[in-house]
Structure formats: C-alpha cells, structure tokens
Length: 167
Image 1 (cartoon, rainbow, N blue to C red):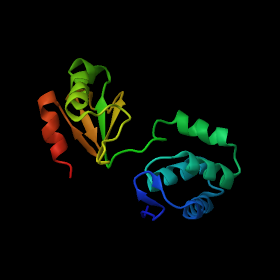
Image 2: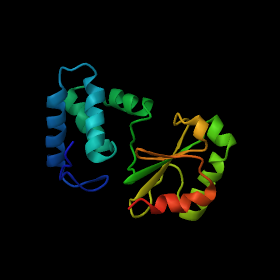
Image 3: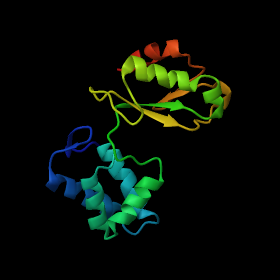
Image 4: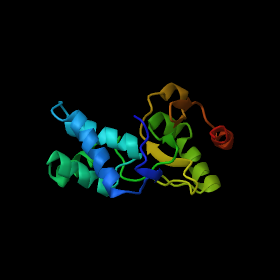
C-alpha cells in the first residue's frame, strides 16, 4: 500500500480531512467483500502503522458499525495494535522452547541495555519491543524476530550486534 501524507511521523495524524478521505477510500474498496471490517482495519493499520482512536472512530462511522465492534475486533486479534510501533519491531519469543533456552535473558538485555520495555518504542522511532509466545522455530531457540528476519540461537551478547545491523 502506498504511504499517504496523512501522517508526518509514524503514528502522528496531521489532518482530519485527509484522514477521513483515506478511510473513505479504504472502505469503498472493501465494501461488500467478506470480512470487510477486518480488511479495512488491516489496510488502515498498514497505512498508519497502528490503529489510533481517531482512525477506529472514522472506520466505525464510515462502515456504519458500532465502535464497540471495531474495538472488539482490534482487541481480539493480536495482529492489530492501538499503539505506535517502531520502524523495526523486535519480537522476543517466550514460548516454552525459547524460554527454557534463554529467551527471558534476551528480553532482560533489551530492557537493561536499550531501556526498552515490551509495547514501548525507542525515542527515535527505530525499534519497538514485543513478547510473543511462538515464532514457529522451536528447534532454533531462542529466537528473536525482526520483521521478516528470524535470528536463531541468540545469546544476550548477540543482541547489540543484531540491532546494529538495522539502519
């Protein structure tokens, strides 16, 4: 999806009129399709990087569905986020295999050395951190996923080098 001028920085909405136009466009292209509300939410999140309250209200209004239904879907599916995310989302796996092999130590290193807590974003907007329950790479535990990249058998000492490779 092309980036819009509706946001000036990730998560910062600058113009209510442009916001309304973008939401109208997204709704119009999905109206009548099965699962239209989820599709609209996915596209809006792709555009804005997350789903802030004004975006969810606009979707509710344009689709003529209660805001509680929009909130219900957004809160049910872990894919959706109501908070801004960094350019790179660091996912530390804390599923059983990764936890046993040191996933918690990796999380602690990120907290200690980068002052980054889960669901937070670095001041420069470069990274955000998430705990995840399984990345599907248990045989490579512990793993850290950043975007499409899965870093395997990560040790706490590896974290700084891994993050420095993201510009």
